[in-house]
Length: 310
Image 1 (spheres, rainbow, N blue to C red):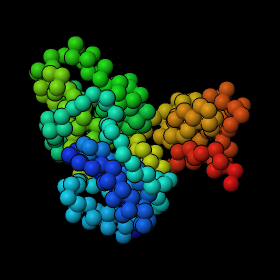
Image 2 (tube, rainbow, N blue to C red):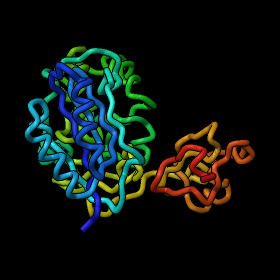
Image 3 (cartoon, helix red, strand yellow):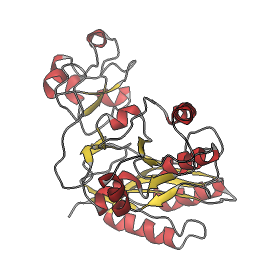
Image 4 (cartoon, rainbow, N blue to C red):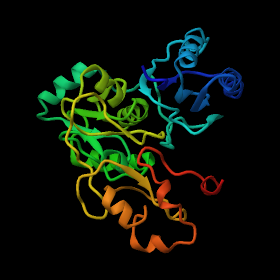
């Protein structure tokens, strides 16, 4: 059995005192073997966590008795170590950085993973949208998905405006998916507010789909915002769709450029990683602040400069 668990969760709900909830969470988590990235606002909670089996189970039990967050649904994975470098719990005004207000009670119709698979089995007449950043879908996506060239979630507002000009928003079914479901909550509500009427979202996101259905219709790996960077969605083997930035051979290992003043996140094969000393381009190899090549690890993002000289 794996020593650690990785949790992903969110809930939109009214929070009268978000700063107080931040303190409550810190009090609970700081005394336990937990690392996390948890954001709380007036509108709810968005969290990712890793911890020992005992302490993650204690957190789930604590949340189940919480007066506000008792209905939070947790998605859970096994891992051999902590997936986050530290414990971060803070207030954040926007749980999803769309910049436009949305009504979380007026989202799209949620499809269970089984219903989602049925939709993808018969894709005629519908539009399937990957509601993630471009570096996420480059390493994994659903077959036939439209992948907007958006490097941040805010850019999806413009994508919605352009889509509205290309299709009939009243009659065209729109299916959307994201990693764990929270971005679809925001974007489906945003689309409905803009006049799109047949809007569907994958309940629990790609993570839930992999656990319930497997990898049917899925290609590649899932990008995650923790030390794993990429992970399979199920035990089923899938086609590698990512390509090395340098030589375009198949690759699904992400790295931050060793040039700390560049720090670009890029896919790279082992051979090119060594040739370019962990850099995304030739020019970066001669940078002043260069992380040592031997520190590169495909399963962990970059660390601060001082960590390499302790």
